[in-house]
Length: 444
Ligand code: PMP
Image (cartoon, rainbow, N blue to C red; front, side):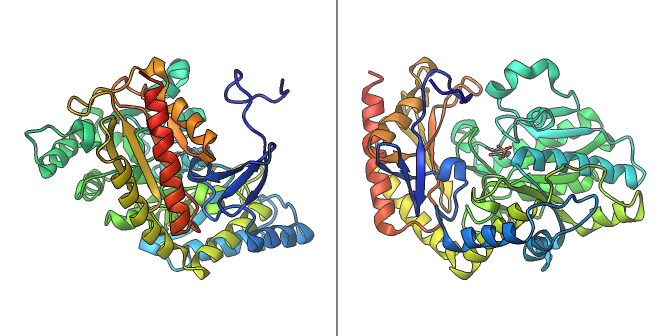
């Protein structure tokens, strides 16, 4: 029995001993394809020599310096690499150790911005149901994942309210065109601004592509442009959480590039450091930081390990490798292959309701009945069965239960490292297809 507290105290997970490329090797000597990079984290795969060398070199030079006293070269260089060319007007970066911390910082920075510009009445956030922004209490308050919120509901902040996500597979009515559905969602958001008082709203926060909660749900065309227009009309900020979907995962460095909008604050994490070090952060529009500079003179928020020298050195090496090895080209090419092969293998399966995603970020949603979209009974824990059957075939994928609002089906995410080859995509789809069939057969 392990002395370590695991997510499940009922089962001991396999010991991951060694990582190499897209493979993780366990204590029994098995090579398991890291088909989801954990939770869309390991974007470069494992054991990349450049990143390891950068971490070692940074440790030899400087392991730590507190940001109240010093800046450090690796953090300065990482910020320069990310926002030195001001993508979409994002000119400043702030680094922390996780996605949750990044979202907390985004929420607090947005509030401080309005204090600085003399709008203290702005005290509310609008977010979306079926979203996930992290497990700390502020980020959990922003999130709409009912399953994760439920135990802590009395502790969550009433400053957050929630509207519907753009989830066409289940929520677009048969009688409705895509444009009509988008218009209905935007009307709902507008109504929520009016209900809470538009001049009390700090920001609207959303995942650009909904990650684990719904499984790689891409918004319909026009949705984010409409959201941006509503935020602008009411003077609120737009915060996009790209912890899972950003840093190349969807085939562009930032997922918002495919949506034609730029956020005021963007949250990044997982793919930023590729798992080599714990790192997250926010990228911020110049005008937001200028307001702080002209006002109180700094960000009234911080952590002991923010802009950690080793984490920043690792992330810089990860981002340099992605650029120099032209890995976004591979994300797009292998993503197209992954989509095609998934559709060929599972598109007609009577228990596969939807296959969706972008770049190397794909989810398969399972249903009891395709016609009615009825989900499997959550008690069957189909997603767990898919995980186990995939493991048995040497594949790790990221599963999620269908209990989030008692409606959508179980799903599993595939998000292989950006270095994946065509032959490896074939192997992933083959093993995944077999695992899905075995797991569903087990549900009777
Ligand atoms: N936002 C999103 C979209 C995420 O997917 C996650 C993690 N799954 C988080 C925030 C929280 O990140 P972390 O687990 O690093 O705190």
